[in-house]
Length: 262
Image (cartoon, rainbow, N blue to C red; front, side):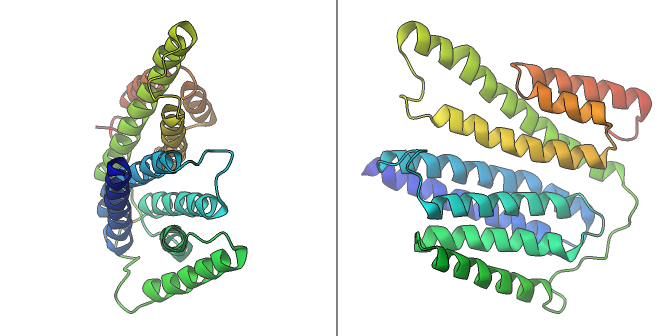
């Protein structure tokens, strides 16, 4: 019982961080402030996913028996993360990015509150979230979308790169722990670091999804070519790969475009 209370508390604070980061990005008029909100959003997203998964396992659930409302909330939170990454990496984001971000956030919260597996109720929650998002986005003076220059500044590129950098490192660490530490221990001695709950795999999977979003967003901002995108994807599946990719990209951009990454 104490563990469940702790997990629910962690999930609550994680959701608060997730929502706080999203609103900080949505309501910011300046481009650098929108990108600066991404770390907070990412921490909240990760914390809510991990605590939610562990909470599900503690209450007798599993990946195979995952309820519909949980899946709906997962998809909605992914849309919110994608939306906030889009609006944070554009000088003048399209209003659809704001709608996508807020609708995803409100829908994920609504599904966790109602916990309904009825498709009609889930669709209704999504519809109300969409309407509420439109109200916020078109409320006079609330969301300011045109106060940033279209020119990419070093401050913007550095903030985006730093965001990608620490995500790549944590993704790399999680893969090392999962493949090079946990799996050998499990095979050789029957020892599982997560007690056989699959939490390590879920943690790595969460970071992998965030990494892919960061790879896409930061890569487009820094004008990466197809080879760099391909190497970035491949490196995330190889132990120590993201560490190599980070250093390779940083070195190449400092040589070719020193103003891009400080």
